[in-house]
Length: 199
Image (cartoon, rainbow, N blue to C red):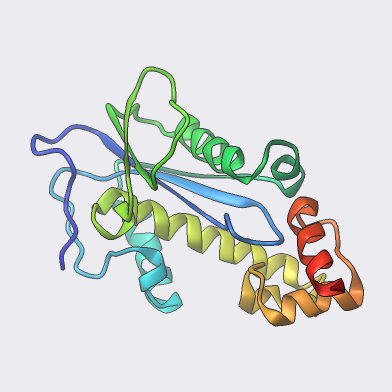
């Protein structure tokens, strides 16, 4: 199914999505993307439904053809301080701050969002599988976060971040039990995992 534009009459609508919300380690990333009026791409979809190869092929297409795009992150320390939901909103706000075009409408993947200035927003459950701009944001957020996790994997290979990207796989949870956590782990999430491993 081809994805579509949200507005019937084109306005600069920015799709926003995050990546890494359910992880034990690493930042949460978010992207904001404004696509041109007649943008089309048959392969573009929710990043979770795409292969890594397809996501990496789509990323330069989105970056070159978008009217504006930006990616931002919120650190594990900030996540521990303000919680992961607020950190996801903050990452989206930071991405929106960087856009060189001010959008007239924000399309948010999910069912909750903290208002951004006076710009109207619409929360859309599974929006990344419905609307082009949100899908584009999901691809950028996912690929930039995956690259970051592969980079820090080199210093902490025992956790398997190159493959699990910080998500709570058995290998990741077992490594935390064996080696403890590190500076990239979210302490609020790690404490809960450690408690379950100790039972």
